[in-house]
Amino acid sequence: MEARTRTGFLESVRCAVYGIVLLLKTQRNARIHAAATVAVVGFGAYLPLSAGQWNWLVLAIALVWIAEALNTAIEVLSDALVQGPDPAVGRAKDAAAGGVLVAAGHAVVVGVLVFGPHLVRLAT
Image 1 (cartoon, rainbow, N blue to C red):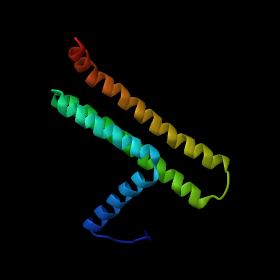
Image 2: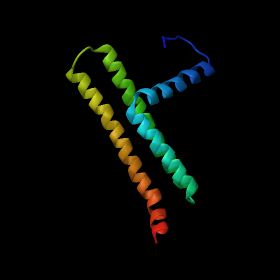
Image 3: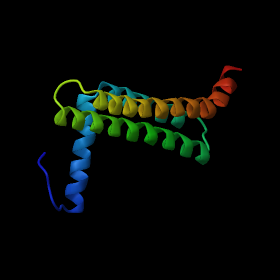
Image 4: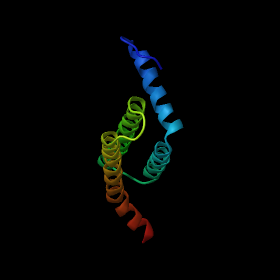
């Protein structure tokens, strides 16, 4: 997509949706996050979750997706601006990837806290 100066709301939404589609088409980890999102929502729909539990799950899902999108943006911009290996770019990419790891770890903890008691109950 080419650079724009001003766009309307619908055009902005179209560009954002295009970005999500591009993320899913080009990033293996985004597809893994999508599968995990579907699994969490499906499992959550099966269980009697409270509104508070849903809030935590949605927050965790959103955090992972935001981190993945920002990580991808940093990687794409870095690769476009710097040709070949660069230590500073490598550190920026590592930091962005670390952000995804922290978000995913947070999501796992939330998942255990929300789903754990339900799984224990189902197992007994």
